[in-house]
Length: 340
Ligand code: ACO
Image 1: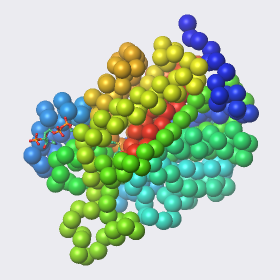
Image 2 (image 1 turned 120 degrees about the vertical axis):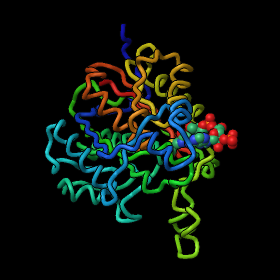
Image 3 (image 1 turned 120 degrees about the horizontal axis):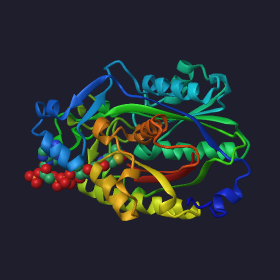
């Protein structure tokens, strides 16, 4: 039987509940398979599948931007939430691949969807960004500052992928996912969130060029500084440790036990990381949502897309406790429990 949450610090503090009232997602049409990659670099379907669980990923068109994908996901979430774009007070885009360094990608999305009354900003927390943005939106709604927020995770990682580096190019893909958050007076909603960071590890997953530290110039353009650099093994180790701790904290703070969780939606970076977390938490495999085989790691979009797929496929139902847990460059990590 499902336990009622104890009076958690979060729910005791909340004056207003915050519900996810609509979700949406978008992935580009073009599919890049492991076979395709094996013709580009020295790799194989067997290596990629056994080490990562990825079979294929989506690649955005050359002229398709992060905000294009974000806007498509957002419109689906808005439609499901049965609101008009003008009702959105706050529009957050979590991304590591903004259309431009400024203005914020959220402003481009605002124009594309007609959310003309929204305050717009981007959230930079790499793959963890979607849950960071959920937490930020929740705080604004809980406090009564805003009623309705649109939270988007969107990334075009293929635009910062080094296609000659087999250590990284097999891992990533493009896409966007969105959620509309609102205060609807229902008991259901976000019941536990937490997020954390460790700047000691800025050098294990990063893009060195293109910022104020190392602008891209004619002299350094050949060095691939505008692509993802990653120490895979170290990231793997840190990802498992941080996601496990974040998941356990969210469950504790919600006053739940692992058995109460109906569905876990972890960051979709690598099937081995997902399985390690499921096993160590003691959650049966069938409760863990996986789509990394179809999309690879879409960074801030990953959990957002998975949440939408779980929602629309009926995998999560009203009253279910859903645990989302993410990890990204920074390092950054976050977890959220929603009573659906
Ligand atoms: N095809 C074939 N061989 C490869 C490939 C490839 N695509 N990539 C690496 N190899 C080789 C390596 O060169 C190495 O060869 P060597 O032993 O001769 O040197 C060998 O395979 C083993 O490499 P490892 O690094 O030991 O492989 P590992 O089992 O650690 O798997 C992987 C690598 C998949 C990258 C894993 O470490 C991982 O998933 N790490 C986490 C990555 C991640 O999640 N990143 C994203 C985080 S979220 C974000 O913010 C974007």
